[in-house]
Length: 164
Image (cartoon, rainbow, N blue to C red; front, side):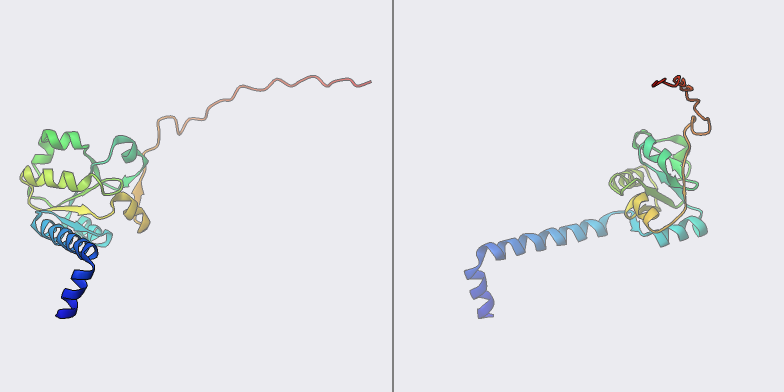
């Protein structure tokens, strides 16, 4: 015990940093335990979708949603959740899986869903990026002009140059 006290006396900055990191870690864990939604990995998300018929909400922006999303996901931008979308509110008791592109926005939207009265909310850890990394299927919207071939103007052929 004397050696610990001696260490603390000799290294006050190091000891102070350790105390700050320890306090931050404890606060993070307490906040994680207190939240009313769960963060789940890809494997558990697949089970939730297939067995529990979860409502899958993509809360990313329209461009990210069009670039790729989980098959069957409903695009629900944060503004629609904030406004309390009526179709969404009818499914308060269903399991809900919320995700975004990288997992940055989805925890905030999960908190909002809990405040709206949803009881079984899950967030996909790592978002769509992790889903793709785990080689899960993704649906992509094709742009309206993707199926149409653009006609290029034909180049005029130059007359051969006579070098004689």
